[in-house]
Image (cartoon, rainbow over all chains, first blue to last red; front, side):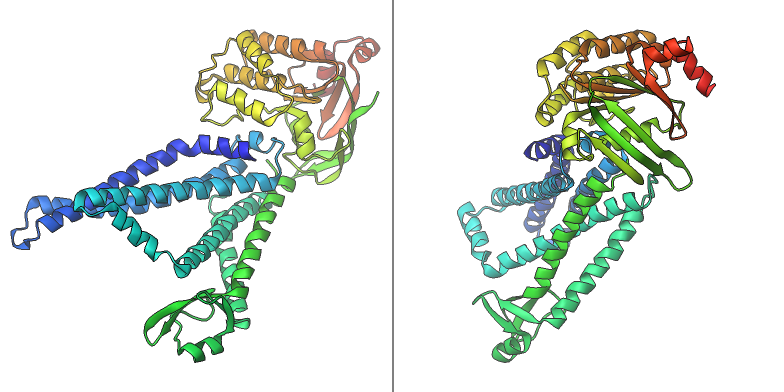
Length: 287
Length: 231
């Protein structure tokens, strides 16, 4: 599987590098623009140059958004290509299991998102130091200070949700290929994905409501929702059908609470669809 | 002789058509078998099922005693009838790729074959002509010391010079320990390398047997027999 990951990276890195270059250029333009705005704070003398910079700020924001979407569709497309293009004749005759193939696609997808995210973040921090001054140690300290059990849990829950969604996309693509044999109906996988996502969201929210047991992330104690509300006089910022809620005791942020069973359900669904995708491409494939 | 491939009652149907219809076939170890038939006779469908990229609707297939899966993929060296290599690869990348995935891949043999085929190892796969592509694909497939080779239409659509080179490579690089299955409708060019032949029509075995015995029995070449059956 390690070897397959290596070739998957080799086959996609040029495109991802291109996206990265676009992201860095766009970030540079945004930061230069902000720095310029600060320098020319006197708005009474608005000139053409500022307007141009503002325009570039807008364009750059669009570029970043566009690049993220392009990377996403590229990653999704790389799985789809295996099933619909001639390269599948190579991939699916390799002595690999279906799970190894899906696993590789998933790992490389997240690796690229991590690389893109980390590179853009670091670049922006460095650029900010150059443009606005300040001690880089201080900035990193500030960033590390924001890392606590709440932000970590939030990241973990978001990651779980992102992984589940990507697996669900792969599952939808595989299912659409297997169910409609050898016919390339472009959007079918997307419709399947929307339907399956809705079903998953419905199941998870039902579980959250039926079993409202939350894990207090600061104390790691399990508590029922009424118990939590009574003790902390909390109001929940989001519906109780969610897997994660914010506690806002008397209007002040008091921590995050993860619904144990909802999160567990999501995890199980993620694993099940992963195995399902592996099964479909190993046992039901029709190239 | 032991059978390396055993097929029993194999059927494959698509929505409105039966590609394979209750097909029975045993392929012996160490033989070069020609699967002959016109377009749409079920040759490629049969091969895709053997290589594990298509599932039968009914019936059973055993390759070296196992159902198509990870093990059978590791012992079958398959040449599809299309450009299956990843587009970003160079010739050299494709050789490294095969070396990484197949334990039975012989790298030095691959470079020898590249030389024989006059292929530039730095060339991009995407930039190769159809004939060159076919030669590269064949180089990779024949450089494995596999138990079974499956070549789907190896000489279709290539010029006569490349055709001779490809046939030479197949003959020189085949060893008697392995089994080779070749599908073709260009029977005249290939009939001399077959030990056994199987004539397929509409997913059914119309006739099969030892090529030499069939020639003697019918007093005609396999090519003429092909024309008689399908003509």
